[in-house]
Length: 136
Ligand SMILES: Cc1cc2nc3c(=O)[nH]c(=O)nc-3n(C[C@H](O)[C@H](O)[C@H](O)COP(=O)(O)O)c2cc1C
Image (cartoon, rainbow, N blue to C red; front, side, top):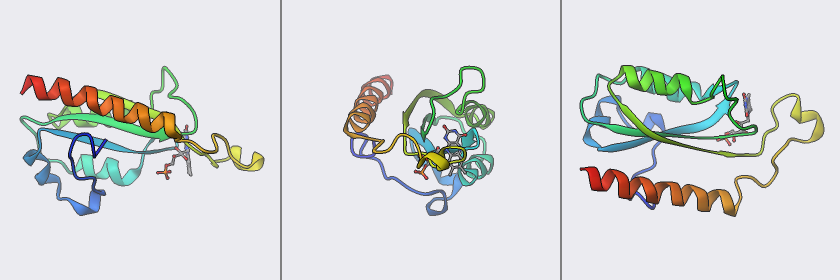
């Protein structure tokens, strides 16, 4: 995604929350831990000042697909919305998961993300690039 969008890929500690407004489009993503994004990412979004013109997408890896009613992305997207950030799309794919109870069977989704997941991520970013690029 970073390659396709010619975007820097940074951990939360590598950028100040106020610097987000320098970008037109920002992706917020991590693995899913106990039904939500990594606490460090949620903390970062919590520290964002109110934004005026930033669009965002969310992305995650998780052992299981998002449950329909208790979506993994929902709380972070709500948090972004309260910060004035417009979430335009989301991406997720499966990943090796050794969280209990899967540890006892040696984990699930070994080998994921795989080449097909990376192709899907690239295609997602290409679509975003054409959509966001054409609306600005
Ligand atoms: C403590 C812990 C909690 C997790 N909770 C979930 C979960 O609620 N749902 C899910 O589908 N996967 C869950 N997973 C699996 C992770 O989302 C998956 O392994 C992800 O790829 C981890 O991201 P990372 O590879 O960047 O560390 C959990 C993993 C750990 C270690």
